[in-house]
Length: 465
Length: 80
Image (cartoon, rainbow over all chains, first blue to last red):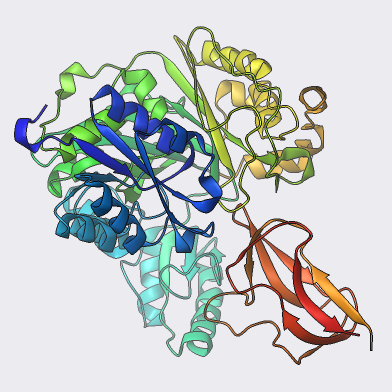
């Protein structure tokens, strides 16, 4: 531990399962914990477990967990010397990171400037390119001239995605399969951009049709940088990851080494400090990978990396924030076996995954070899309707991917939440799917699968009791 | 004139406008028709519209924008 620099009292500026996870790490490090909570979370597991707890506002997150002032006041009032933001809420809010540091406390994460720089798509892309990390071929900004756009489209390679503005969600995106289509679609997109934004500029990017989402976990202390291998998160519904695993079944050792080395190169180039994730699209057909973005926080799916490397990422990030150098070098980090995490959400999978803020009853947790269940549940707990539906993460670890899938299917049979409906039945079905079993999927795979199979995802068995 | 209430079927956070930049769906004194949207309820990051079940005129909102609400709670009152 870092003598005078070490952290002695940590405030957790989050809720739910990640707050529980952070309290556990801090307690093992001998650090006192302060849990902030909204009026809706007074009976939460994190509040019960923490050494101290401070109510910071009413249920809506904008008035509690997203209020920089309320969180900082709680930190000052309790004498905390560090703040862990978890994920979501204020985790990637540069202003919050700055305010924590300005108040004389340590922010468990990178500096506000780093968050700003990586949070901006253009500057993150530039940083990646400067570090030699491949980015999705594109226009690197707005193109105003249609002749220039035509020439560039051929250079990027079809299919090309045309957007009326850089960013701005999925609105107004057109896909050109070839030069003829591009010549027709580009002027339409420009006209639409002109009428909507008063500016006919276009942004273009190569469309990677059946891409996988693969991300690399990194750790840095500002001087040394390591990776903890990759996670594949291609199984997504409405762009939300539901099943994450590592290592990816799609990569051979050579590509894995290149991919992970590129993430470390980016971390080193920006002198990263903390835990971070470099996200990529991976093209199965060409074997190429492309940087999408870097997340400057601990991620929901971090346990996958913890299981396959044995490294406690939350402990490491707290130690780094306290001024302790990284506790390991790259050659000490070994890939062991295969891990899968599935997201247990309070949703009804048989009813279009509608939110299900119900009450937990007859609660049973899965256990046995290679099973970890990070969660916020207890018997009688009423899930508040105000926040994310994630209530737990079931993580399994085994020697092979095949054994991990079997272990997952087994562990789900042991999870009981009584009258609370969850996404658990989805994972039984996925574990039994032939494509999932051989790892044959991409980011657009799950939604069509759900259209075929959603009606079978009833958990009547777990509902009685 | 009879009185009627618009209730939220769901628990969550109540919003009077589709997004912070946009005007409120309805104001006190506005006429509504059955099926008109008067607000949104956010339940676990999912948004559901709250609709009037009868024609009438809004006489009061019983909750503020961004208030936490429970199922069956009265959102607005109507003269029908």
